[in-house]
Image 1: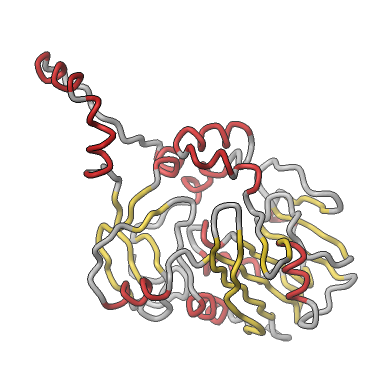
Image 2: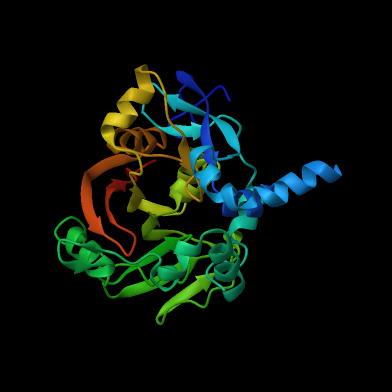
Length: 303
């Protein structure tokens, strides 16, 4: 890949085969599973049976992974896979998102997911739950009372801010929309909105800059776009990826893009939007304490 899919720059650093594909992602997206091959040779097959007890311990010492190449953008610190995934392949990951079949298969490959399956998407920030936290953050920055609001790719739309107004969610899966939210499943039916949020969407998509540009076309003039993404890699590691030697593997799971404050700023600017507010927020989720980037952008009048 010769450009950053986040800011469009051609200033990329090759990181090599340092990405490790998670088993569930590998199965869903590429329909591939790592297995231990049973030998067709009689003696070797016997030896495999005799040493089977040691496999789990040896696997921890010498893990087998599916590795892929990563790149870091020297202009915005964004980390991406060198070869982009197709929309069709990523779509297979979310075709039945959060349904019983999805949860069952994911728990098979990631047993720890069972403990959080019913809490995905929830978190607290500053003592508030996700909806109240966002609503509190937006108050005083924008006036959305009575305005139209769209959650783009927001599952059931339950995480829209708690302001009175017309609420919509664009979602291609068959998740039932939250109460008071109208689901739109065909992108051609989208109109313009005073407020659109891309909350925990961009880390999953194949072309984030193209998506932000496309979504901003549905913003009314002077309308606001909220972007929220996790920062999965800490700042010290992101800096090392820019200049230093890489001596570790970075897990590639449902988050195929890695963000920081700078990469979100550059993304918004590349989409011809104006950053109004941007900051790092500390959250507590069912998984762990994490850092998110939250930004509010505006579509200038006349653009």
